[in-house]
Amino acid sequence: MPAARWGWPLPDAFLQGSSRLAAGAKTIIARDADLTVLQKPFGIRILTPRAWLATLSRADRRKLQ
Image (cartoon, rainbow, N blue to C red; front, side, top):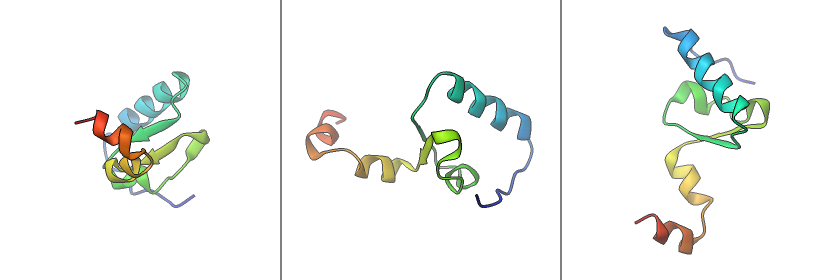
């Protein structure tokens, strides 16, 4: 797993991640480069909005508009 460039507030990032893990999240959508470099920690995919949209079918993308 690549090392992330964590800055302050480090505790907030871990609290948010642990709450998503506890909630059973399968995917986190984030623009934060420090998160997206982690790829799939604890089985949770971390995708940019563009990468997440690419996983949807054309019909599903139309439903978002």
